[in-house]
Image 1 (tube, rainbow, N blue to C red):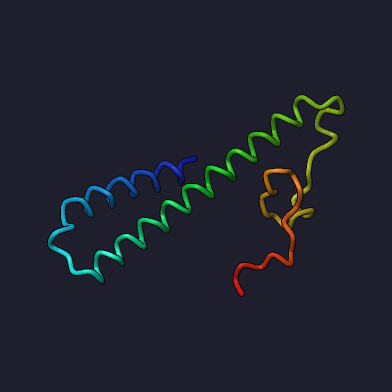
Image 2 (spheres, one colour):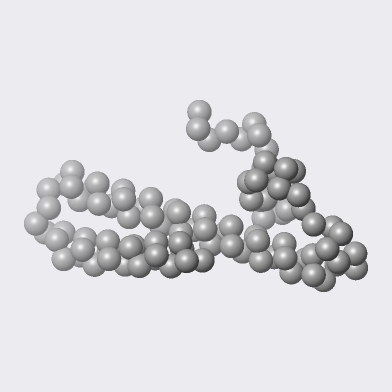
Length: 97
């Protein structure tokens, strides 16, 4: 959550800077700043989803009848966050092709 708040602060500074300097920048520099801002926005979204999945997993384990006996092990998904429907990521879904 600390990382997310630092990124959100960085995003606000980037937006303010972009608004102040928009008319003074050439197209390439403007696109470069926009690209950086989109990258930070994607990372904030990813962190929000990760935090949400960790919280919902904790809540599910607390409310389950077996208590903590039903904890997920990090090895099941290779340490990756689960999808929203609680299925492990598909290894064939490689986005780095």
